[in-house]
Amino acid sequence: MKGNSYFSRKLHSLLGIIPLGGFFVVHALTNFQAFERGPEGFQKGVNLVNSLPLLPVLEFILIYIPLLFHGIYGLYVAYQSNSNLGRFKYGRNWAFTAQRITGGITFVFVFWHVYQTRFQVYLGSITHEELGSTMNHIASSPLMFVLYVIGVVAACFHFSNGLWAFLISWGITVGERAQRISSKVCIGIFVIISALFILSLVAFRGDEFKEVADAYMAVRSIL
Image 1: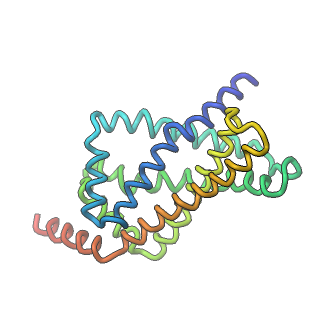
Image 2 (image 1 turned 90 degrees about the horizontal axis):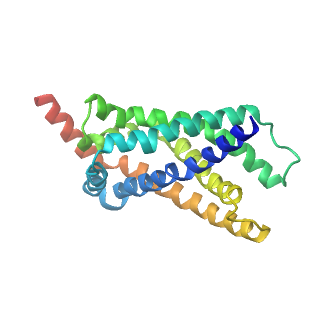
Image 3 (image 1 turned 90 degrees about the vertical axis):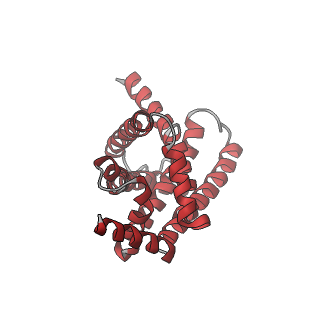
């Protein structure tokens, strides 16, 4: 059992960074096009991603399966673990607990977000060209906007703190000095990616995306 547990924890740690962490960063950069370049720039980013060959297969193998394992096993680990009080210094105790709390929030939020967007594309309810309009409808609701901000900040913390732990558990940052430096780097990553996502949400609420959403609604009503 110990060997299986060790392997599962290593795989859980690895999948959180590769491929999920890589996808998370790409997703942040794609969404940020909404803030930096408006609806047209965002759509170009979406089109670039969707131009990849065998995209549904790649999503299933590189995103959905790793996400299910990472999320479900992470919830199991969180359930089995204690609060970790007294094991590390106060800051790391706080991060240990926050990692598990944000993991639960992120797990629910990600599947909720996928259902509202990507899953609706699979069902044929919306097209790739309507993802910006869909996000406008979501972000325009004050309640949904707040819930999305909570979700993305939780996801950003979970990723950046998980990256710090990954570097230690895989023997990349061994010494105390290296861990202090990586901690500062990971805090910077948390701030930057959180800002990218929040600015994207602000952009999705804007008039440019509302105009596009209204245009799509007008076309749908005619058709």
